[in-house]
Amino acid sequence: MNDPILMAVFAHPDDEAFGTGGTLARYAAEGCQVHLVTATRGEAGEISEPGLATNANLPYVREQELRCACDAYGIHPPRFLDYVDGQLTIVHQGQAVGKLVRLIRGFRPQVLLTFGPEGIYGHYDHIAVHRWATIAVGLAADASCFPDQLSGSCEPHQVSKLYYRSLSQKHVASMAEEGMAAVMMDGVPFPFVGRPEGEITTVIDVGDYARRKLQGMFCHATQVGEDWRSPEAVEETLTSDWFLSEHYVLARSEVGWLEGIERDLFRGLR
Ligand SMILES: [Zn+2]
Picture 1 (cartoon, rainbow, N blue to C red):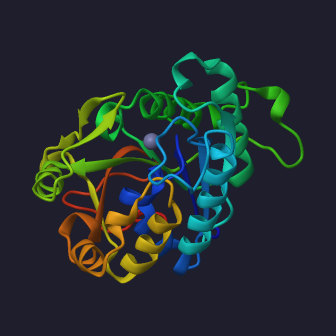
Picture 2 (picture 1 turned 135 degrees about the horizontal axis):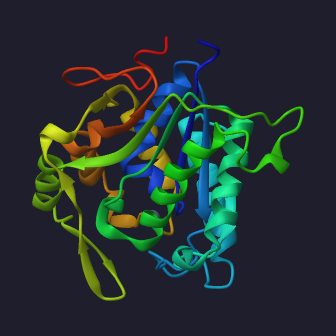
């Protein structure tokens, strides 16, 4: 295999933090090139504490927060698709998929991570990104798709493994015990959606990278508020089962499938 390259595609700054921050940090530390693509700058979300940002500068502040998080994980600076938070379902789908195809052909990852169809808690933007990324992985390898992109530095590329970032039902139960059963959007609780244990194909142990993951989370100060930062809260987070391993469903594979649980996203490629 050429040098390992991992690409993650999410909707908002902080989407990468809770469920994949440890994975990004771990693979970067192991010498992998890690690229994060985020569709929006998260400007529709609430601001955790007044004074950290205004509605006017929130896109700028959240971009800086994501840059800070990428530094914490030790990965490349983020790339943005430059869409508006909350409006991904009305974006021109062909344009969005085309942007991702171009990035996939440019970065040439063997492994790509994105949301599953449940979007972690059913956020419409997450589900849109899931669809774009899944379709883009299929089209990036096909020279007849977006042929205008193809030039010396932009050739068709086959992603070898496509993963969906997922929560297990066990993790969802353990998060609910700690008061995190749902995400409030427009005053409505959207519950986290867990997958049955049998559907989880891949578990990445991120215990050694838990502090980096937490550091990345804390970069998202306008989203991850003060209640996460007390010494007691940090201690609780760093010892929580849901924080120390990250779960995925292998959705497409060019290198076969493992019976039982995979412990490495690059299994079959090294
Ligand atoms: Zn999100």
